[in-house]
Length: 464
Image (tube, rainbow, N blue to C red; front, top):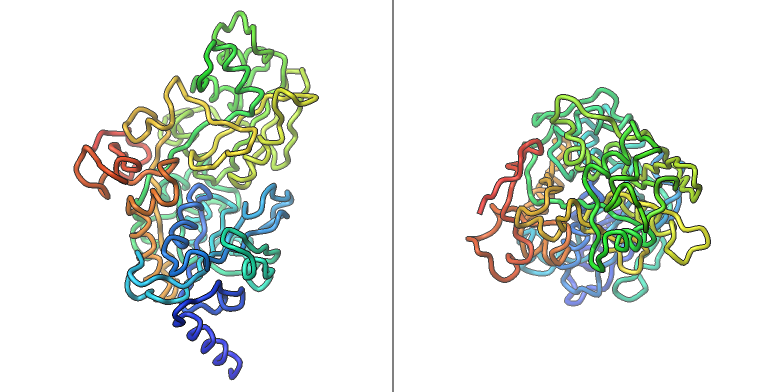
């Protein structure tokens, strides 16, 4: 008890100092205000940005990321640090976006990415009924000291887990979307969630834009086939059939060609299809089902290919197919990046689906247009893979955690914070959070004119 009192006193002194330094892992673990968030990996950058831009001193923002290993029961190692989980900590500035309660206070946010959006639904609404692996978070006690000693932007690595139910969840669509078998991970069995399972009804706070990505080899050859130097386009029907369970190797690639009877630039008909997609339970995968496959809103639809949790990409010319179900968006990028470009010894054609917010700088991966519509047109209603993200709070969380979760969700909806985190890419502010159209300033960059009204089965409608 005496040591615990000393630790708390040290944290209090640290947070109240005129110029607090970057917190150590031990100080972050003892922060007076802590929030454990599970769910959407597409929103990881928003959560990271929300903490960093509210720090008293930006250089004192501490980050710890999951090491490149298997996490939370996965048998596949991550391809990038932070693909499965991240921890953020710093002293909040006076006048921060979360409220005066947090002025000059040390705040620590733990965010689990692995498992995707459904991980922000069932473990939050039914923590007593989910497997133990789904109540696992990254354990800051296993983090190294790199984040404490290096310059701004550096991070530490963590290797261990701890059982800790999430206080809050974020999902790319409202929780009801994940009740359907096609979007509900097998770990959650026959569970369903309703508003009453949460501390309060889920709140829509942003729009997530998704997109199709291809490796550089396919991108270059699509440009050549389409006779253009700009961004090539993939037909929605083609992508749906390439991923569909009824894939026919004799003709599945043909819709990608400008002239299906003469694929002069593409040698796809006999080349293996390699897809990197998100596993069941991901909001990115759910968006793909809603848009490309009319699932779960349609009366009937084809299923997606089963796929594997192991990357089995191939350069064979057998007409076969490999589908890699990645545990996070970072692992989709990693798989496609290693697929190869036109200079590779055995170039392969690979494609997948990602949240548009993913930074592909330096990667051999690029977003393409869908049916000649560019993702950048999403805020105008000119691109359809747009769904509304929600946050939900665990009714069993502590009073302090519930208060911070509500403050965090409210702040995350502000256009200025969305812009700071994404600079207009991938996540849009809801029309209800924005002023009168035509928008100006930051709102012109991130504010959407369209909405589904919080119902993913509704069509996009012009709101402003």
